[in-house]
View 1 (cartoon, rainbow, N blue to C red):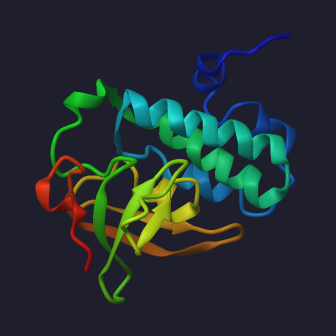
View 2 (cartoon, rainbow, N blue to C red; view 1 turned 45 degrees about the horizontal axis):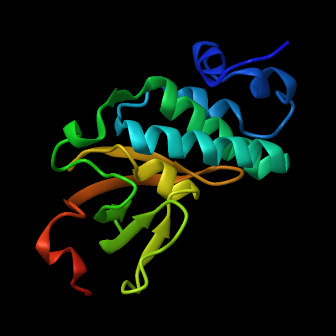
Amino acid sequence: MRYTSQDRLRNGAGLIARQHNHLPALRDISMLRPIRARLGTYDYWQLNEHRRRFQEIGTAPFLRLAQLIRAKMADAEVVNTRDVGSGVVTGASRVSFVLGAGQPQTRTLYHWTYPDHDRSRLAVGTYLGVTLIGLRVGQGMALLDSEDVLGTVTVLAVQDPADPCSSLND
């Protein structure tokens, strides 16, 4: 039977959850739902490609990350990329965030190729990257890793990639 990405999304966590329900801590993802996020169409399809690649790898940490991506895609408000608006983390944003009560950090997100001019970059295809993408300023979400919940990450500021100051390093 052939499944499209839309068929998989309509099934919630999809086929992977049913085939691999023996993996540790996968039920944590369902406790995060609904995931409040706003994704542009470009980021939505890039996330789908990350998910597809992680499923092909097939090991437990990547399957868990694929499930997190699937849940975010299924729950997100998807809008035209130009209509995402300011203050929302995209796959090319420079985002300031804090993990729990820790020190604020600033990173530039990227999907496949990283910005050469930027020292502090963060791949979207990581637990932190997937958690941050689509969140708004002031919004927080539980940060997972391959086995547990690490804490809560909160978005402090988002710099749009079209912002003329976005090329500045900290």
